[in-house]
Length: 569
Image 1 (cartoon, one colour):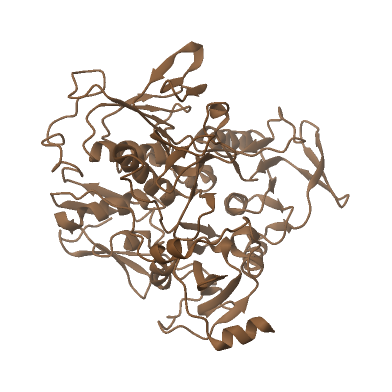
Image 2 (cartoon, rainbow, N blue to C red):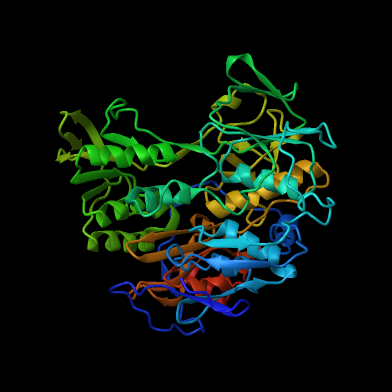
């Protein structure tokens, strides 16, 4: 990669994918096209008038200012131009109408925090930050100007201890923010895996295909964290009132503050063979490494993937790109229906079929037979499929088994107040415990008061930061966490990006582009007592056009007479 002179804009151009339309779409929205809405995942409790009105002014997650400039570089081999960097730092990154990413290499101090956040949130971890003292130096003296004292290696100004339970991205984000805010006590990060925090989305894609190595998955934005890492350690329980984690062998780890960020685990089918090397899930780096090794050992030619969500669809993409025959077995129909709805999900099914994936919708496996050299599956329509390997992409379950009986509400993840403080079994927020990431269930007041879990990379970054702030401030002073969820996927070269929670929508309209061209932006709304509320937007190969929709999420639009007449029909 060649580097122009410092301070001049850098340019990254996305390679042109075959059979894609790249015409420039007008910025003026085209006439809306209504399509079928997604099925509801939750029973939605609409917000009270006070909550709804106040949600309009909910701010983005706060950043810690930096006082020195930084330098930016972008890895051309990783960048897919999803545009998240422009959402985080529009002063530094910009997508042109031609689909190129422009960025300023030399970033002044006033925009350094936003640039660093863009690096944390980059889906492909393609952005590197050089220089700067890092956030928090202005509020904690010269802590960043000298090599950090490692935990246990020297005296600390404070005897307090905060424990982060979970060494994933949410836990890393929380730990880094605690230091950024000037916490100078002991910081302990407990993780069940033996690895430092790494990016999970590439496990079913770039890592499985061999494009990225294990070392390239490790997060770089906060690699100099001053913490004690207690890895390869399983959590056994929580003594809520004694303020201590219970570890194997009867050990206890006392704390003054706790961040629960243990994430989720992969679902398994109870009827699937538990001991077969030919049936695997992918949730951790160890899972992905085992799948890659087992597929090679089995000399797999035909792979069956169970599950029509993002994981299953992306696994199908990876397997096809590796030259394997792929059968995608999905109990529901169409693909991604719970996220995108019927019509947009059907588009994804068409993309998969054009790439050579055998998509079986509305069916399931009812019998498994492992014959040693082949797996024989029988579907509920009595069809038999012989294959070399099966990968389960059936969704996830929150990792809260260690919290059962602790006194926290863990009915579906860790229930939290709007501030991220954990709620106990009696409905009270716990001042010294917060939760973050995939395991946390909380009410995002941008939408309503219904607690939900969100499982996306950017959400883990932002909620980890919010949880750390909330732990330091306490329930009375902490801000409410009301972000705009954002997620993405790539299906055989087509970029799918979303903001908000499209699954809450009851009406969908195409505001730019067209379904026929498979390049469009779809806006999702639902009816409330205060008018139609914008709950999400999804773009197919239109990252630039999606940018305008982020700040509209959660707002209501006035009802038009045309809309009212249409609904009465």
